[in-house]
Structures are given as C-alpha cells and as structure tokens.
Length: 254
Image (tube, rainbow, N blue to C red):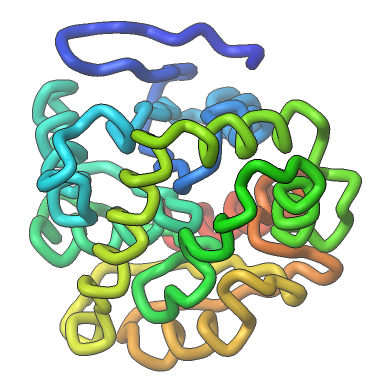
C-alpha cells in the first residue's frame, strides 16, 4: 500500500488530498490497497479521498451486518465533521453506501457503485467448503477478475488466510446472509441521490443484468460499462475507471 494508514479514535483510514470528500468503501475480501489508483488520481484533482477500514471482522457477530456498517459509516462522517460526502463503494461497500444513502440522503451528494451487492447475492460468501485447499481458493479469487493474472499471490494469500480463520469465516457468512436480508429492490425507486454505476461487462459475481436492474430502479442513475472487466473495475482497469468517474463528477458539477 502506498498510502499511510491513520488511526484516530476507533477508526483506521487512509486520507489523501484536499477538497470535496470522497469516501471509498471496500468490499468483503477487498483490501484498502485495491483503491490505490483512485486515491492517487482523485486526491490530485481537488478531492479529499478517504478510505476507512470497515470493521468487518471486529464487530460482535450480532452486529456484523449491512445496517451496522452503514451506522459505522454515518458515525465516521460525523467524526470527520463532513456536511456532505460523495460515496464510492465496490461489492459489499456499494451495498453499505446504498443503505447509508437510504437512511441519510442529506449527507450524500452523490454515490458511485461498482459490482455492488444489494440486489443479487448468490455468489457472496458461498463456496468456501474446501477452504483448506489453496488451489480451490486461488481459482475462486481468479474468477473475480476477467484477467486471472490480476489475482496476485498476495491477493490469493489474503483470501486464503481469511477463509481459514474460523472467526473471519463465520463473520463472512454472517455478512453474506445480511446482504441477502437487506435486499434493496423496494428502496431504490425512492432514492433521489445522483448515482453513477460503473460495471465490468464480464462480472461473474454480480453479473451485468444486476447493473441494468440497479439502473432501471434508481431514478437518477447513469450506467457505464468497462469491457474485459470482472468484479473489481477499479483494480482491473484503473485508468478507464478513473476517467469515467472523473467525467461523471465534472458533468454533475462535483
């Protein structure tokens, strides 16, 4: 990771740049370093980019759910003293961003979701029964991307370590169940916040039709596709992702 982790009160986060705050929300297996290119690009363009470490494995089991992570995000925004923020979430992070926006629309200027859960969760948390088998885990990690080479040994090792830690695996499965419980299909048509949807055309975790459904249900959304791209567009095609997002933010006057 090229950016230093700050620790204040109960929060650990990366912060870079000055200007309009963009809070980046990572996914279930996603490290903060997945967003290095987003941090570098937008922190040099008049934004303060903040990536908090979500307490995915540190909350009590009963509080390991989408609703509590949205509350954690709200408390973090209050702690930082931001009146309004732009939220950017990948996978579970997108779901947390959506749920927070539903509860506190006055706090969110705009929301960007990529490979987000919230409508379709069948691939989250499942398939780890052979968790002791490194090659099985490696294959699962590679399937997240269009180009399997993006799943470096470091990424595979991190996933392997997570699913072989009993406490982390139990929390992972709890979050997966919570994501299914907190399906947002009924909430989305009431959300007036401007939303940018950036999706990999070859995402097998949350397939393209999920993006289309988000776009259909959200009143003020725009949908952008990235070709030859899986579930983590900001990692697999960082430059294209940044250009799309930058264009959308400029067009919207943020």
